[in-house]
Length: 194
Length: 194
Image (cartoon, rainbow over all chains, first blue to last red; front, side, top):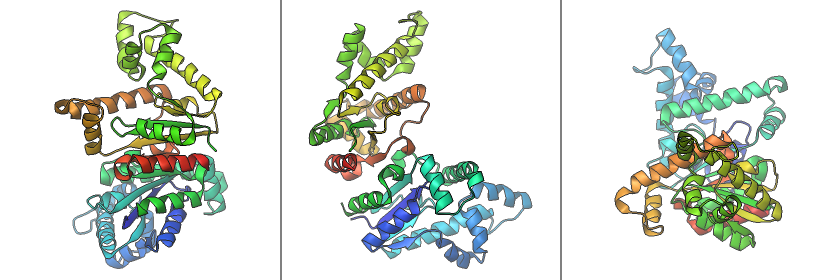
């Protein structure tokens, strides 16, 4: 039985929703973007600011260095990364949980009780979900998805020296556009129980 | 129900064995390296020669161009690729089957009845299987696996312009070293039936 499930996901793939279903089915704690509020408390920074920069470290890296800002001798993105990392290690120690994004698979790589998952989907399904479920503007959707992919890929590479979305970094990857959210959740739950 | 299952795999991951189990469970025809004998019949080339060059097109590309050889105006690897491609399209048309390797996922990308799978495993398990099951020499195993990965990656990139082992190219990817061959086969069979 795996105690910790990390879910990395393409924007618009439904990875977060699938992760939530898994947490509900297993009775595990669930951590997604709301983790930011805790990081905000730890750092005194504005949650919106962290949200913007917590998964887009390269851009803000450049930005804060440009302004000559630093936090405990670190750039803001490196400081945020350190705080998020501390929090994820603490959460994982507390007990059974599902963690969405934030390089949790890499941060917890020394543990042998993690199941690392990656969820992706074809472009049409991602666009549809982004527009219809997340409410993203239709006329700019191609650029939005491209930017999101680039940001996540760059950020993951910067902190983990691994390639985001490469199968060998994850125990299982699934195409939610072929199988649907429920089937993906069921498979993850089954595998977590092995 | 998916009619065709393509299985790409890291050397030593057991992908071929898993593919065989899936074919047996579903009652599907199974095509792996033995496809080479048919390509040999089609081309009049030696099966051993095709085996060496059929998934290592870059090396032999250089080699045959260097010698100024060509087949129907193509380099040997491009000619082999064309023949393998024809054969895979023919096999897929015949009916339900499991196909191992040879960029079948890419060759059949226009069809909507394929389930594309990628099997990988951690390095220790791959070494163990290569030595104990395939009988590869122990003292050279690291280099052997590295070379196999490089060859498959380069070959896949050359003919498909996609990245070998990138999650988004496959509907499902699985780490056989965590789950074991049987569990992987069961999951693939389940997904094929959806």
